[in-house]
Length: 81
Image: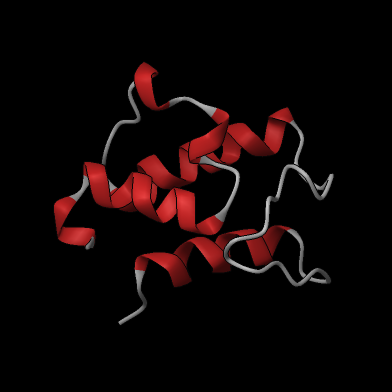
């Protein structure tokens, strides 16, 4: 069974198949992510993990890295831990 981190990594890899991104690497800092992809990340996390990201969590810091997104999921979906 895939882990939360693997699911997030797979989603990003599907969008950028020719790029290797480390889990701690700032995907926004790499220049690959635009506002459209940021919204896709939000929709993916909500749909795939079954929770709603509240306004208080819509901060760039929660989406910069695979690790940050995994932490966001775990905070909101305890079963994902």
